[in-house]
Image (cartoon, rainbow, N blue to C red; front, side, top):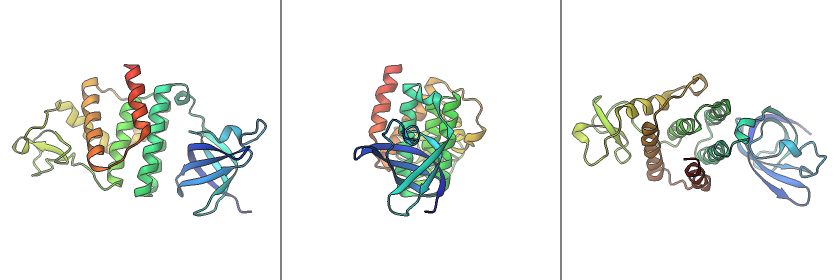
Length: 245
């Protein structure tokens, strides 16, 4: 039996027969793959603790392309304990895993996996999980082929922009502003920065609540208008966020 080693994150688990589990794992090499963890529900199984949702590990598999692979063993890369101990962080992380799996269905670029891992590790470090999620959401748009224009007016190319428009595809200037709400000038600067930032280099995130809300509103509206994605984890996240207000 040939053993394949892959780095990945378990995005879902469900019982299989009496003692096993079926896992979906996001991997850098193969995208999302289905894996059976035989006997993983057993108390003494070596797979028990490495076959749970949000396990970030190096997995050793009997890999079968296009079929169900078999988990042999796994070495934890990062236990993500800070995320696992906080319901709000868990909710953001679950949404990110769900969103990433949907993006990978459209584009299996390995950079998508890198964005996910970098985002989760920064959340684990204690940086703002909401802003980090927004960064991932913004970056994923290019892999979905629906990137907004955050450089100049989406209509005419003018650099003198005044607000954002989901309908018009990003920044707009005063000449092409119609009934769009005028956002804070800092929102324009920060959303562009978030779109281009290298996640691994982020050490601090200091964004006002007003700017956070305006950025999040734009992203939500943009996804609703252009992606057609409906994710239950996003609805759950909204409910948890309201409970933390």
